[in-house]
Amino acid sequence: MNPEQHSIHEAEKNPKIIIHICPREDLEAALRSGQYQANSLTNQGFIHCSTPEQIGPIRDFLLKQNPGIEFVTLEIDSSRLHAKVKYAGATGESLYPHVYGPINTEAVVAVRAVEK
Image (cartoon, rainbow, N blue to C red):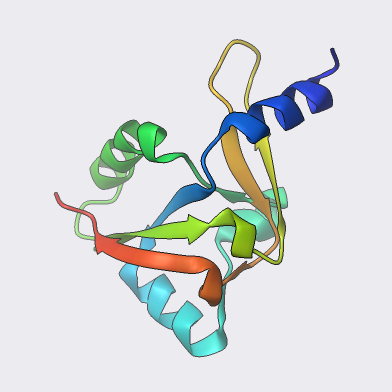
């Protein structure tokens, strides 16, 4: 099985709700424009997301690396996204959802403050 087939197979087993953590000010800009674009979209071609089960370590890392920044989680219904979602990860690691385009705000079904 090639990696692309593996990713597609895993994606079928994953929930339709995916999570992205961003600074609150980035969310406010997205609400004005109707879409969210992380820096990684420009630099890497996709926006990093996670499943609800994967979010803990990512949240902890971001809070430790960025003290003083107020973060929120975007709960995204992947079936409402205009952009494609692909699941990828290094060999032997969990697969994470990557969004290959801006996140349209109507796909965001909930926003929650990240507790420190």
